Length: 266
Image 1 (tube, rainbow, N blue to C red):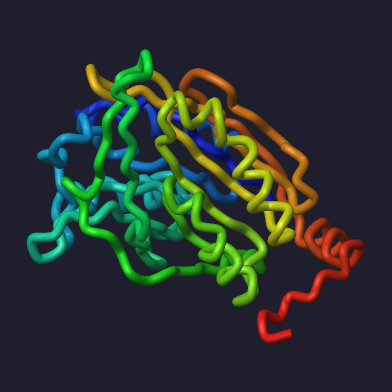
Image 2: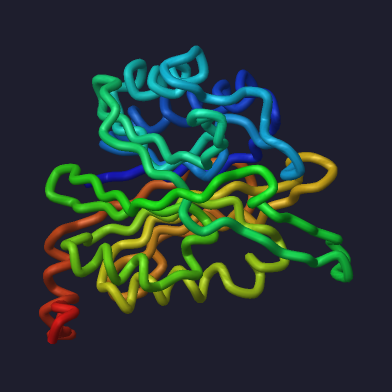
């Protein structure tokens, strides 16, 4: 299956972000992609101190705008998240739609990010718990034989989540992110390759990049990594879409070579 991975420099305005995304979706259609993965908070990027005013809620206009990305492109739209009001709690929610615009499932970020780099040159200080409520339930989806475990950004640092997905049959891990620059430089590639290697899964990590506002700057380097831990594509810096082929045969080959026991009870 050919996939596209979009790397964005999202801003507060949904209209500006959607304009860029639609351009990349047109490119994905021309390239023959089946599914496109979006990064964390692709719809509207706040400064991290308060929620965006453009909240998805029930089936409001913001929900319909996201859904229409799938409906108008005829592509699977996967992984990307948007701030969502759920009975007064703000969730960082991943939306996943099939090419007809039908919602497959949503996933709420379970592990909320907190970092104090006030003494670092970046002076980055983020505490997502001030804005978001943590989700409680892992979610998986199945597309063309690929079983995809869903996650968002800081979830990456909790390997037990991905082992759980692997034991449930996942062969792809979606990790939509907005990694800060200092932590990205230090840990991004290493952690993502580790999740691929230890689970013998493809890792698809769609990321935010660049200076989004006065407070937030992200690392970029959206990656697709194969089950052997090889990086198939690295978007590096800038807004763009990159493409990769993922293969069930490759997964089977790697797992056969390693002959790893996959039953957690053994």
